[in-house]
Structures are given as structure tokens and as C-alpha cells.
Amino acid sequence: MDGIYDAIRNMLQVLAQNGIIWQEFKYGFVINSFLCACIIGPALGAVGTIVVARKMAFFSTAVANAAITGIALGILLGEPLSAPYISLVSFSLLFAIVLNFARSHSDLSQEALIAVFLASAIAVGSALMFSVTRTINIHILDSFLFGSILTASYGDITLLAATGIVALVICALFFNTFLQSGLHPGLASIRSSVRVSYYLFAVVIALVTVASIKIVGAVLVEALLIIPAAASRNIAGSLKSFVGYSVVFGTIAAIGGIVIPVHYNISIPSGSAIILLAAGLFIITLFVRIIRERI
Image (cartoon, rainbow, N blue to C red):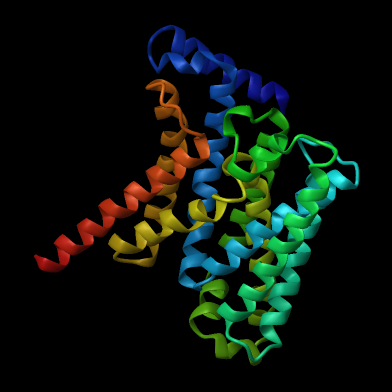
């Protein structure tokens, strides 16, 4: 994989040196960030359409915040500070599956149950983070909390690409089932395939969340999962356009959030820039919807 990344990097650097693209692409860290954006934008945009359609935004928020606990566990167990992925992935998957199991076997509303799990995850995560800060500088964890796409390594790109491909393949194969189980939850008690889809999609959310945390940050990853899809929902006239617009908006936000601050020398974290751009797209589409309705 490193050879492929090097080839892409050399090609973009040549284009930048010849003035065909922005000069910032002469730098390797900008190219790595650009590659991450080209993966994370379409992946989260596509998965986000199902999240919005199934009204699982709060669920994805809970998983993202639970990932902080996984990060702290990994560091306490001796994993590398820059990549505690084993504990991060394991805990996030376990949290998503247990939360989905409890949601399927409880009389509580989905919002109330997720709120319980979310509060518990934050409490455990903050307690573990307090223990972690006794041995390391807490600022080392900033990239996981708020994202640091400009420090993405080849390993981060590979993890993101592998996870994105798996998530997109699963969503493509089970797209209709995912939507059906969300639109007609009563079928979950009748069709076993629908019941399985709840767990399968919970795993998809956990995977894309975990893979994106280093890039966007645990605090902001659920925003990039939801906002492009919500913006698309404002103007989409069909299911196909709903998915298409969401992928486009997610890609524009991810790439623009990286390139614009670097090009114009704006001092703002890349994760925040990505979400602000996505929010701007949402506001624009909201006005477009209002104008359409009045016309």
C-alpha cells in the first residue's frame, strides 16, 4: 500500500509544482489529509443517509462518545499512544452491540435508553481519562478528541480505507433491509433478517466511527455522519438523490475543510473546519428548500 500512496503523492506534488493545483499539495501531510478526506467524505455521507432515515443520530453520538472510553482503556493496557486501535475497536463494537441488544429488549423509549448508555460511557471515559493523565500529557489525546487529519499516517489511511470499503459494501448489500427495518420496526418481531439488520448496522456505525475518530475527532465525528445527510434530505426528491447529495456534501465538506484553512492560512482545527463547512451546506440547502416551498 505504501507504494500506491507514494505514487499518488508524487503525482500530486508534480501537479502542484507545475501550478496546476494549489501549491499546498507540495507537502506530504496535506496529501495524506486529502486522501483521508476522499475516503471519509463519501463513506460517512453514504452511511449517514441510513442513520438519518432510521432516526439513529443519537445512537451514533453515543457510540462516538463511548469510543473515548476505548481509547483510555487501550492506553492503560499499554497500547501505543498514537494508535490504541485494538481496545478502541473492541470496546466500540461491544458498546454498539450491547446498546442495540438493550434497545431491543427494553420497554424504554430509544432516546431514554441511549441517554442512559451515553451518560454511563461518558462517566467511565472521563474517569479513565483522569487515570491516564497521571502518566501522560492529556494534550496527546487531543487528536482523538478533536481530530488531527493533518497528522494522518499511511496506517491511518489504510485503516480508514479498509473500514470505509467494508461499510459501503455492507450498506450496498443490505440497503433496502436497513431502510425497511427503520421505516417498519414492527417487522423486527416477525422477520429474523430484520432483527439481524439492527445489529449489523450497529456494527457499521461503530466501524466508521472508530475509523474516523483520528481524522475528525470523537467529539465531531457524529456531526459529519449526520449533517451531510440532513442537508441532502432538505433538497432530495428521491431516494437515489438523497444518497447522491449526501455523498457529494460529505466529500465537499471533508476536502474543503482541509484545503481551505491551509490555503488561506486560517488557524482552525481541520475537524472543526470540516463540520463548519458541512453546517454551511446544511443552511444553504435549508434556504433552498424554503424557497422551493414558497415558489
